[in-house]
Length: 405
Ligand SMILES: *Cc1c(COP(=O)(O)O)cnc(C)c1O
Image 1: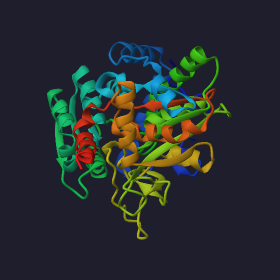
Image 2 (image 1 turned 180 degrees about the vertical axis):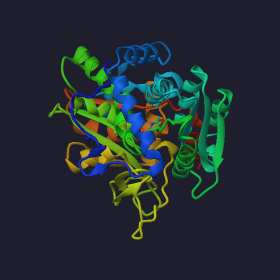
Image 3 (image 1 turned 120 degrees about the vertical axis):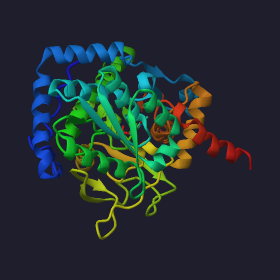
Image 4 (image 1 turned 45 degrees about the vertical axis):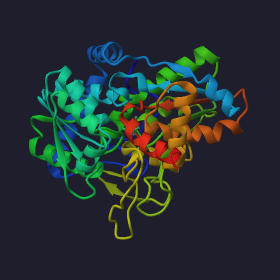
């Protein structure tokens, strides 16, 4: 599969998706970002790079992932046919390894011996620690101390893989602060170190590059649905944290006018200040961590607190390409609350024998709303971005607590 992106020429050479994106970084990082951009462009043209990436995606990560018809759930919801794109079956349990693998191969080309990353839920940290181990590179992962507590299992996994996990005590002690620490490290150690950023966020070239490494999701899904159904789907649905799994599924379909797309943000306890992470609901245009996009900030420009039951969606800014697609009206963005996500989590587990990640459960909650309103001839593809093993304790606390009343 070619990682290049023929469907659109965006971003421009400065990393802009319309008025969004770009590169807002300290001077010391500009050279590193230029070097990374040039190496990425060279790698894209290099058949050897492509060959190694394809080989490892298949043999190490387990691609291609199935496009699976959720028969019982479809029947019970009584509307459109629902297909799950099974990124949950990938090595390490989520889509994140697509990007981590692509970037570690770039780091190798760049001659960098040290890898750093930020992580929220710990999934990106685990994916990064995994590929760093595979290539014998030193690995440091920054993680907010609150997240370390919430996702202890992933902290243990990273350490078993040989990575150093550094707890971040600043601010809200979650993902935003972890990104700050990773950027600080990168500024200091830029000559020896590659920063594997974990979503379609940050300064150019990251949003473009991360998107391209995840396009394999949509490219496969497109081929698979044409083979199974002989036609394209009516609707694509994916959850949106930074937006990498969603853009990976959506991007190869952007030119297909009849394919509708819905991105689902975290509605948390509801759309009130500090209680959610739905940037398109009451967010503002601003700059955070290197990119211009929609974010949650108060009138003074201070970043607001966010909340979601899923650590992977709990971030104040959305990827700039999603801001662009929203402004163009090409993709619709909505949200699911914690309760709606948990109810979808339970339903998929019980009806399909698949325990989904809490992040993915936000996309599933939207399927529950959309499918019954559609005809039985219609087709939905929902991105099952990860598996729920990491979330069982948290889900049990909510769901069993609820039943115990
Ligand atoms: C990290 C994560 C997400 C959110 O990140 P995106 O960049 O928006 O895809 C979604 N699902 C799972 C399973 C994750 O681990």
